[in-house]
Length: 63
Ligand code: SF4
Image 1: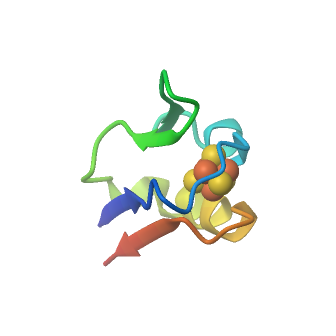
Image 2: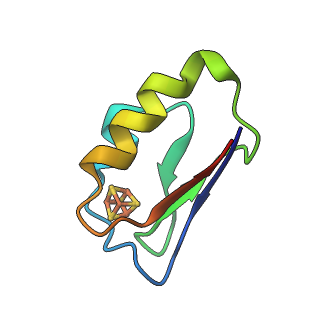
């Protein structure tokens, strides 16, 4: 699957990186960024938890 962060929507709360730090990290500007756009399916649940926890719906997942 592919994972993206809508940088205009992200408020840099850090929830996604706390839940799934192998996929998300907070960049120098304090905004979440995806380390690797293509994510293995075994991380699906963690990514979904991050999506569910994001207060602004900034994380987009493409199957
Ligand atoms: S959970 Fe959402 S708003 Fe918070 S840092 Fe991650 S992408 Fe940004």
